[in-house]
Length: 269
Image (cartoon, rainbow, N blue to C red; front, side, top):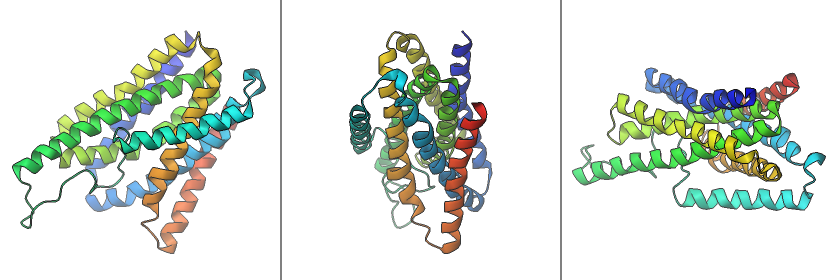
């Protein structure tokens, strides 16, 4: 029962609390928010990669699971391809900037959206919520799988998810606001979407206990999702900032994210 409360608490951390923290950034000015988001993204890159290579993959390859290394590699590869396909299907779409040209149609020359464009914007906001709910549901499953493997790994995995969720949810807030949602409505729907993490965690808790042999593969799928998000989604956005000072900041923050996961994992052990 103690494990249940650990899973419940950290799935809330990875979901609802991340939304609340992200919403607080909307109180900042546009310039302050634009400065903060790249720093959050850089830190998230390090946290996701650190959780993958320092926690999830090593635990999946532990001798107690007796999993062949080739199976681990194949699962990792298939996981990366899976998340590529999901993103292509716009089911797993992330945005970490105030403006996402891929989501929102451009206004006319007077800066106004036509009614048909407003309808498209609203549909875009709805699609973002659907995609995020699926994303959060999967995150919940991954958090539970990590906790059922090792308590410390569960904490590290949840922290990495939270580090990524904050800039992602901030981007989602901005998209919803641009899509015509009121701020209170956007917060309400984002919180509902974040509960997908709890739902996924609870479902996994009651089903994975009888499927322990699947845990190493779920851990590798978690690692592949973290690696994909970091390398294919977050890092390309960092390349838009090419000044030497910005590059140094990115390197330092990526390293800080990885070190944070390393210290958290080592301290908990």
